[in-house]
Image (cartoon, rainbow, N blue to C red; front, side, top):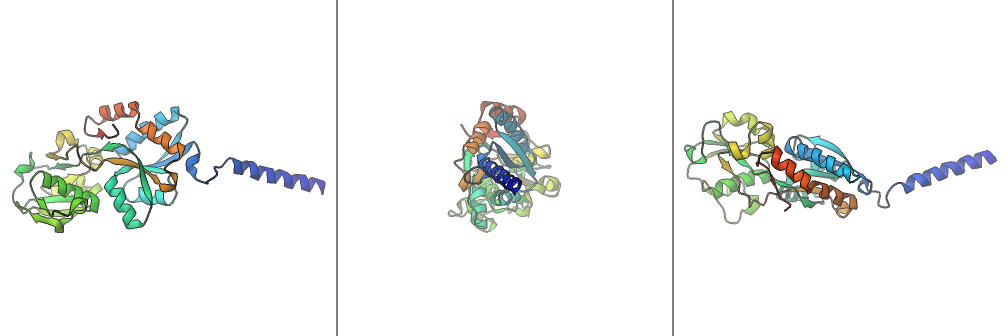
Length: 270
């Protein structure tokens, strides 16, 4: 009986010690390890560099790579990720609204200026009347593309459209452009099927297109579509999250971005 009591006491102590190893709130982000999601391409490449920098500060980062824009947020909201880095603020705001989630931004990262590309024309002004124009089919990036065209003087949107513009908000379309909504990730593969198309930078670079060199129209640097690091609201003030932001916004990562992407991606935290 004495031996059984000793055994039970040992098991109890092991449970207590194990519990002390976890944080008080039960969130993963109190540990010196984070699971971070990113989309394939530039965001993945940059996070690999961030991972190196963070390691020097005692933070281990495990990367999970995604090929679409929805799963990284769903997985974060479900608790399978601790943070993600791939989206701009308007997209995050819309996702929260559509899915009743409470994901928040904890730091700016980069601006991937959206570009318009064409295999047949060297300038946006060369597009003929009735030209087929490929547009991302998700609301925020579709709106973004429309605003780029409006700023260049090729369409006019309703005054109250702001960041929620859709095709129904087009009030003037002098060249009668035919807009074809396509999955953002697939547009580079379908570029030959349209006269021109708006492509997100990460997908463009993946296809060998560099915005600064290859785009026939490029988004302005005063764009509101700066990318961010997102976490669950409950973790926004965690020390380890601040370590992640610090690593991302380091001089080492800034230099990597400027050299690796030849000016096509712009750092946004300065």
